[in-house]
Length: 119
Image (cartoon, rainbow, N blue to C red; front, side):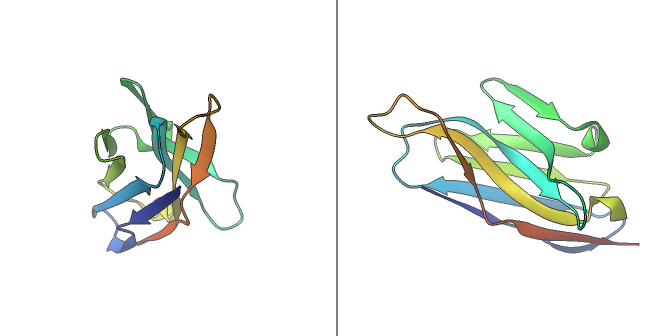
């Protein structure tokens, strides 16, 4: 199983970016899919997560970022609007999923995509 993220880049303050991630491989079911980020010198933190029919957002992105999932295509996207310099970080796609013939849930990470917001 691999998570492939795309869509990062450089944008000015107030601009927008859209991140996308696709999970590929021998997947039975994806229980949750979302995004974390890690800025230099800081711990990785949750940005947004979609699990079942619900979504959770970090307080610092509420009203600016929107997460969406396509369950049939095993994809998750993050629309980021009104970007701020403090949003600069490496953004990681994350999925909690099950594989065939196993009752266990596995945690997978993508390699990360850089988002840089200039002031």
